[in-house]
Length: 239
Image (cartoon, rainbow, N blue to C red):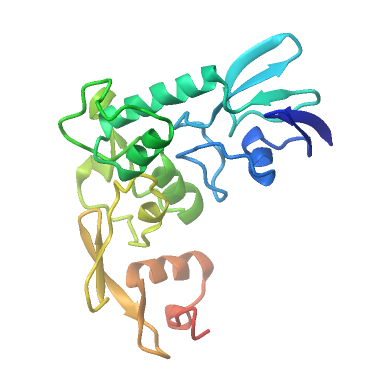
């Protein structure tokens, strides 16, 4: 165990934990856009910046990657930290001016409605956090999407921006997307869903008849686990 101080609060934490983890456990709020318990931290969004002092050195670090240490002093709301977060958020708003999540965070940080930087005319909602890409690769195990292009044109998409034969329509990417960029459409009857330009036929539960999962997703699970598709054709409510 190590002893540290976060926002003048004495805290005991386990060695190896990150500042973000310890802060959450102790009710200290640090904003973040790319953090999920199912994924390894990446520090991509830079919103979780905090100021740390260890010995005589003081610096700004990403709390999702920086591990706690004995005697560490952390300030999550110093003027230096808030200024850095505002700059990061203003840059994100220039790229994604239509993102509701970013606008709400900007209001909380007291950022003026007038943009500091010229907004992107394409009005994308993608903040390049890589949450969707990492989820598809590390959690689902499919690798159906990735990044294309560079600079301001960089964006997440399927290979060559064509229909991805690897996508199984699970919707995990849309679920973890923090800005609402990835959208998944489901028909009123629920018999199909559309994502990444493809339409996926949904499988109905053989017990209750409710549509509950894409057929391609069940086939993928069957292939990777060896469980017959027919055994998987039961929704979670009927198992």
